[in-house]
View 1: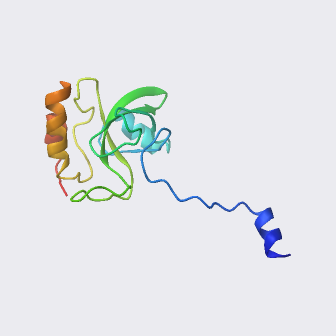
View 2: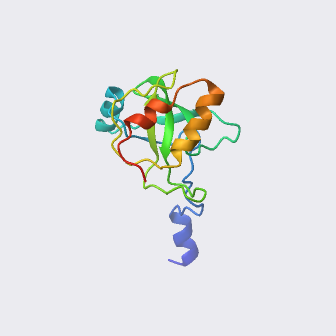
Length: 144
């Protein structure tokens, strides 16, 4: 069989992998909230439905709306695979912490280290948006 025949019978992917957070991206819950633990144990991680910014691509510290176990929950992105700006580390997975509408985290502990720059990002968003994200920083035990 010729090379052309091989290319026709197999489906080769020529596009690059998108590591950025867009709609329908799968995320990993890194807090100890009950709904997050159940979804990750069942092997059904949450999917991103909406990103609350004007760009359509999620960055560190952005709020997202996720579908998890048939419910809609909000979350904060705390670790991303995509290339970040300077002084922001890259992670192996796209991490999220689930929050309620007022910005209070649903869990009481965050299992993975979160970037140190998230402290300043969330501090700016706390003043402008009215939601209180300081509790999220308080339950984080390790910073990178």
